[in-house]
Image 1 (cartoon, helix red, strand yellow):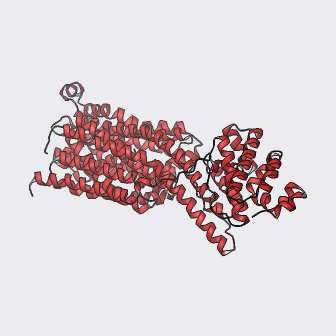
Image 2 (spheres, rainbow over the protein chains, first blue to last red):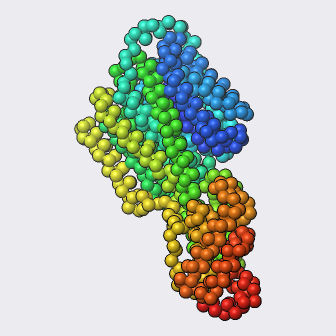
Image 3 (cartoon, chains in turn green, red):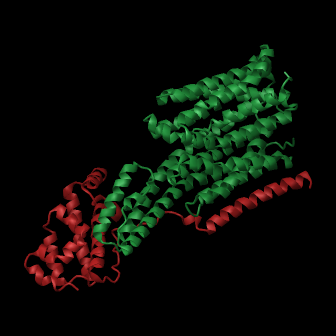
Length: 456
Length: 174
C-alpha cells in the first residue's frame, strides 16, 4: 500500500477536488442546457440541485460502505461510477436522463470522497495532514468549479463539462486500484456502527450555513455576470477565477494560525463581508466584483477547512464523520439554492420592469420629437419581446444613429441612460439574495462560537 | 507572535477588511444603485416653460399619456410602449385585460387632461382648447392614439382637425 504514496495522495486529492467541483461546475452551462434540452428554468435547476441533494443523502451511507467493503474498493468503484455517469450526462438528450445521470454521478462521488478520507492517513502519513489535504482539495474544487465549467462551455460545449470528467476520474482511480487489490472485505460494519460517535453538531451546522452562503456567492455572481451584465460564459469564467485564486491565498494563511475556531470565524466574516460587498455594488462594473471575490475566496478556504477539521478532530472513524461534513455542505448548497433562487427570480423580474420603466421615462422626458420617441419605443419593445424576460442589450434598438450631429448626440445620450437604468435594475435585483447570503455566513458565527474548542 | 495573538490578528483583520469593503461601497452609492423611480401618472407633471411647437408637443404627449395611464392604473411608461405598435397594444390588452373601448376612453381622458395642462401652462389658447375638447370626445381610438404619439399633428395642424375654423384658431397658438 505504501509503494507509491505521492501519486496516490495526488490521485485522492484530485478525486475529492473533482467530485466537489462537480457540485458547482454546471452553473455556467445551465443556460446552454436550458436552450438545447428545451426545458424550463425550474427544470434545469435540478441538474444542479439533484447532484447536491444526492451527495447530502448518500455521503454517510457511502462512508459506512467504505468501512465495510474497504475504502480502496469503494473509492475505485465510486470513481468508475462517477466517470460512467459523467459519460451518460454528456450524451443525455433529455432533461430527465441528465438529472438521473447526475444522481448516479453523485452516488459515485459520495463513495469516492468519503473513501478517500479513509485512505489518506495511510497515504500522507498522519491523520491531521490527511484531513488538511482532504479539506483543502474540497475547498479548491468547490471554488474552481464555476470557472472550469464556464471555460469548457464556451470553448467546447456544455456536454464537455461532463465528458472531461471521465478521463480525469479514471486517472484518479488508477493509483487507487493497487490499494483495492490488496484489500479484503472485512465485514466491520456492525463494529463501526457501534464505535461511531455522534457527529459534531455545531461544526456541521456551521458548515451547512456557510455552504449555503458560498453557494449564493458562486451561483448568483455567475448569474449576475451572464444574465445581468451580459458577459459571455468565458468572460464570466475568467472573472470568477479570482475566487479560487484567493482561496489558494487563504490556504497559505490558514496554517499560520493554529486555532480552528479563529480561522472559521475569520473565514465566515470574510465570506459575509464579501457577499455584503456584492449586495452593495455601487456600479455595474466587473472590476468592482473583484475585492468582494478576494474576501470570499480567502474566507471560504479558511472557514471550510477549519470547520471540516473541527468536525473530524478526535472523532473516529474519519470516513463517517467526513461523510457528515459532506452531507452538511451539500445540504447547505441545496438549501441555499432552493431558498435564494425564488427570491432572486422574483426580484429580477420586478427590477427588470422598474429598469425598463425608468429607461422609457428617460426617453419620454427627453427633448427628441414625439415621432422619434415612438420609433424608439417601438424598437425597444421589439428588443424586450425578443429577450423573453432576460435583461436586454438595448444598443441595437438605437441603430442606425441619426446623421445629424446634434440628434446623434442626443440619441447616444439616451441610449447610455437607458442602458444605465437596465444595468442598475439587473444589479439591484441580486442585492437581497447576496444580503441573505451574507446574513447566513454571519449567523454561522453562532455555531462556530458554540463549537468545542479544538486546537489541532 | 503567539498563537493566541495570531488568532486575534486574523479575526481582527477579517472584521476590518469586511467593514472597509462594505463602507467604501456604501459611501460610493452602493445602497442607492437602483433604477430611478417613475412618477405616479395620477400626479400632475409640471410643464417646464414650453417654448416652440416641438416642446409643447412633447409635454402635451406626456400629459396625455399620464392621464390615460392614470385612468388604466398602469405607468405612463408601460402605456407609451403599448401604444407604439399594434402588436405591443395587443400584448398590453391581453396582459392588463384592457379592451379597445376601455383603452379609447382612457386615451380620450388623457388627451383632455393634456389640453387642460396645456391651457393652464399658457401653451394653448382657450379659444382652441374648447373646440379641441369637443373634437377629442368624438374621435376614434386609432386617431386618438395617433394624437398622443404625434402631438405635432394636433397642435401644428389644427385646421385639419377642426375644419376651416381651425385656420383662424391656429393663429391664436402662442
